Length: 135
Image (cartoon, one colour):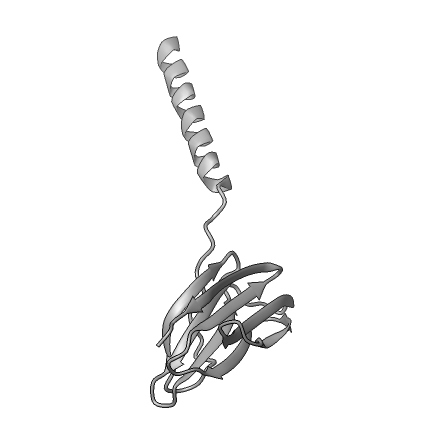
């Protein structure tokens, strides 16, 4: 009988530790959803992950404009340093940066048949792609 109680107690302890271990594991950051900030006619053609959100590159085939917006995964009333930028490869950045609750941008560039550089930043973390989407 004593062995049975020992096994039950040991089993309960292992189960409690396993459940506790699951509860304290950090969660993986969720990707943000595109919020339509670039306007009608723009479709998402690429994205870059950030720990606290996503940078979206969109394109409007009817007017030849690219548009970049950086979106937070968990918007709140708490302001975060954010940036969205785009340029002809090697050119001057068109950017929108500041402290935002939800998203930075949109920034647009007419670049048919040209390569572009685009980027986004949230809280100092930057992700970018250079010399891309040529065409």
